[in-house]
Length: 151
Image 1 (tube, rainbow, N blue to C red):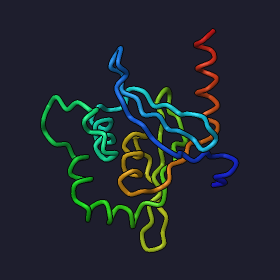
Image 2: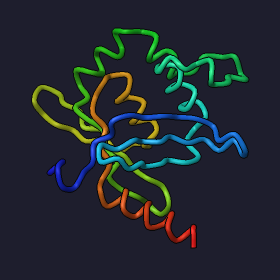
Image 3: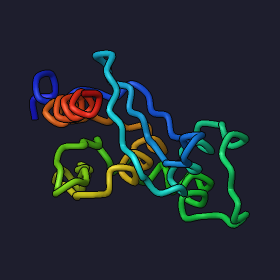
């Protein structure tokens, strides 16, 4: 994968609920100054990302129960073991109207790629401190779609 030309690195991630309509969003801030947005992500992921980013007071957990994401980030040995296996996360495809991410895992020198829900893959990258990339073509398509909506 030629990361310089075909992929753009994510520098930062925010997750939140839009105030007016409650739509869940993950915003990936790209190294080239653009943004890549994922809408209608699971609310649990938004809350989990905010918890690991120490913004839990901004997230609302109406259920008051812990999720699998809370446990994954709470037990350091789990994150450490995952960090040994995960190389990177790449949002690299679209099936119909949904994005797909690839998580690159390594086992005894063998690289295995698993296709995942992007919000889940981003969460894994955040708890393991691994890089996230977005395929340039997807960023450009999203920008074109936004321009069409504005017209």
